[in-house]
Length: 175
Length: 102
Image 1: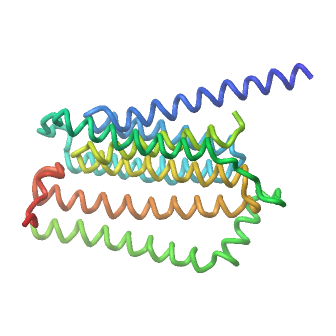
Image 2: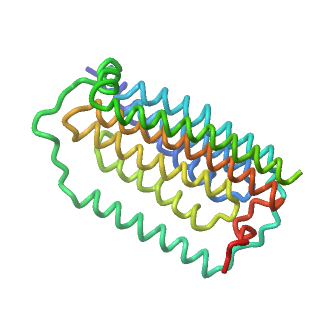
Image 3: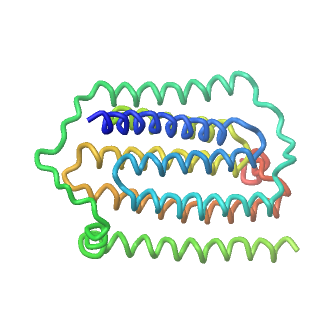
């Protein structure tokens, strides 16, 4: 009995530590002016979100988050930074009214969304399945969601070809 | 810990920080990073509703997977456009890209 209590409180503590990592990473991804710090903060934040997916009961999605976001997108951003040398950007500071307007817009959005999510009395569905397995996901992807699956594959193919063509043509034009 | 509202609040914080970044940054790569933050907030919402409310727990995971695929495509296209723009302008400041301004 006491053992399970200890494990529960440990899980609580680790949850709040993970939430702190997510917030710290998000702040680090937005506020510093050095772009490398932004990417490192993004990596921290996305890893924290993967841990939150673990808490939400989906090991598969946590792995996919690490693989796709941290492993692919962040590395692509790092390559873009190396190729475009944006480190010494000559950007002047924003004027104060614009900063205030941006903070105000984000704060209004945040207040609205949190108010809605705390005011609403969320009701779970009447009968809920308990089928979290990867097998079910695979079956659904190949039966009910087969069309969406194929359209996403097509979108990815077009994106890859488009990226190659865009960068290749621009090199030919500029040199 | 295990309540829907906590996850929704975390997701709202992520989305608001991303929104602020998109509004404030002038570095194009910084804007792309902020967009990834917003997509992650939406993904976290999908997974939270899936865990606490939805009738079929597999569907929310599939939708989150689709969002990840779209995010990968968007990052590839966005980064290639940023590289092309950098080769043309020698800068990735958004306010420099104003050739089509009327």
